[in-house]
Length: 151
Length: 151
Length: 83
Length: 83
Image (cartoon, rainbow over all chains, first blue to last red; front, top):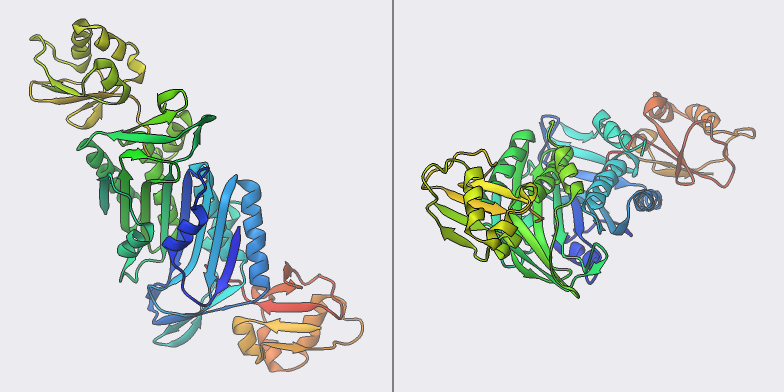
């Protein structure tokens, strides 16, 4: 159950291999990778910068991971979130979950990214032709997170 | 939109990199990997062998992928399924979906593995201490596939 | 027509595939199964419980009511267990 | 107490963090915000619409009713947009 907040890129294949290595109880591995797009809300984006709240970020991510572990029978769980300046096609975030059961891996992975998006203290500012623009929070992200509330 | 049925192992990191390379429209990449477990229904499994129906397998997988593409706005989609003899911790199947939208990637990935499990003509026979045992289909897999039927 | 058997159906029938010419008038998969069961105990065991036999004609899923003709590829197998 | 500002709140206030000693009797986050707004136009703009200001005390989410004491770390920021 690892959480990392880092400026550097990550190697998805190596991270998944590391999380699963030598554990024959794992039947399913689900992962999600968030990438920087070159367009947002119809406007071209040449780069974005992710700011975060050191200390609180790790704390919130650990809380979310603990909640996933409480809800699903997980063998392993990894969250990596980058900060700093990122260009289109670069990797922002990685979530990987492993379990004996396919549905537990798939559901917990979706849960983690949905909750992370509304609870982890990161903020994006985008470079556009009109200058820097702070990304506004989306109602759809709140809705996605809310659907896990009742469980 | 690629489907591969092969005896050889696959490199998850390389496959994801290949599917996303140079496409700045992708915001989310979801993946699922199925691994061989060393225990099934309470019995130790030393290896399993996957048999399939060459020709029909590729056809069914292509149909399932086309259905996913019809339901979600996907940028890319990859399904790799192995056959032959596999030992615990070995990779069986890989599903990767990419989209501008996180939910489209996550949902279509779950859909693909659920449908694949009930429609792609593969059969597993497990080596146990009591000899070879054909894996029986699970009601839970039918239920998982059925939940996508109404969409 | 070409018949294919997979998994434990293949083991019970005793062969992975064969080319057969059923009697004239064998117009559906169901009639074909009835005829196959007259060919020996392996077939009888393989087709004893049709609830757990899946059918594909020319690589598409279908059922026992499906019409068949001489050039068809007809496959019989248990519920699938891949993934 | 230590105050932290992030994203556009940081830009409006004009600094990422500061240590302040609010008047005696400033017992809640809400009272602290009222006092901060008396300190200049940057603060007034930053805290103009409290519906889009999130609050954390000692790195846990809370709201304007939360009690605060001298040793606390209090952070103000917009709704988060990571992931």
